[in-house]
Image (cartoon, rainbow, N blue to C red; front, side):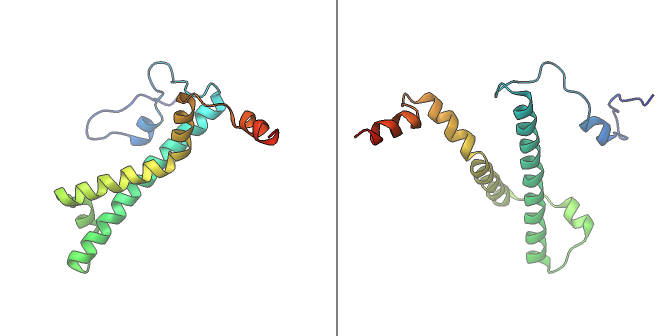
Length: 126
């Protein structure tokens, strides 16, 4: 049987670590395990896409500054304060766009407004 313990030290097996079960009970925001899994996958994809956008930003900045680049330059790149601020804003805007639907649903749940179906019936009966 394969040893699924999370390795520590310089030889960390990131695949084992990424697939290690979480400790404690999983949060239940949606009340449906299948929806929870989809939300979890969506959030993981958002995180991965965000990392890719940061790496693309690195490539663009290095190419603009040097005209050429190496893998070592990409890996060693550290954004300065302004670049970090721009990246942070880019990520916030991206997450806000992706989470717009769920955010609007959460906001609607806190408002004391009648359901759309009820408003529709009232308008129809006018």
